[in-house]
Length: 96
Image (cartoon, rainbow, N blue to C red; front, side, top):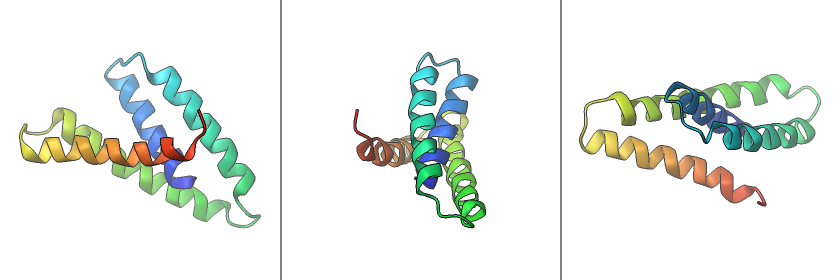
């Protein structure tokens, strides 16, 4: 849940950057995952959960920026697909 919260945070912030109308839906999903993370995190493990969240957020943010603003070609395509797969893993955990 920590990684998914971070991943969705990265997507939401990227959507804000590129003015994507889907940011509200992403925020709703991120908030739901964050609530589950809070409920599932044992006392004393909050710092570790936050570290995982930040690492995942940074990783997906780098992929999204590489895909959108990097040099076009296979590397950009790979970054876009990788970011989409990581976020899809999180979506698969949620019941719509």
